[in-house]
Length: 145
Image (cartoon, rainbow, N blue to C red; front, side, top):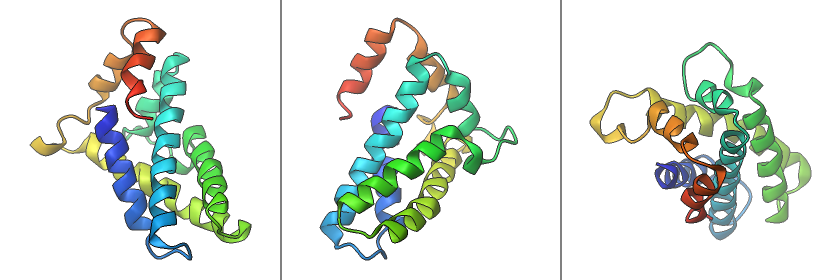
């Protein structure tokens, strides 16, 4: 499921950032780094035992996406990534502020979907990542980075 999340994040980031001032190669690189940053942030929360922050993010529990610490962290990371690819600071901040919540909301749609093609995106599967020790959890995530 983590690999599917990463691929979906890359795709959504490439789509939403395609109109920015960077060339397509820089945008693709930023999308991949942004997706890695999102997965890393999720894994950090899960491995720290804060699964509720992750499940809250991908459910309809009434918490605003923009208020999530995970999303706030992602905004900062995306801004840094975009700046490192050549975007000026102000534009990078604006782009990250627009893109991060849209990305998470797009992923949330997959978790809330009843479509068979989205069945891998389940909160139960996220919960399953916690089973076992942190070492096995990190082993599961190794292939993503």
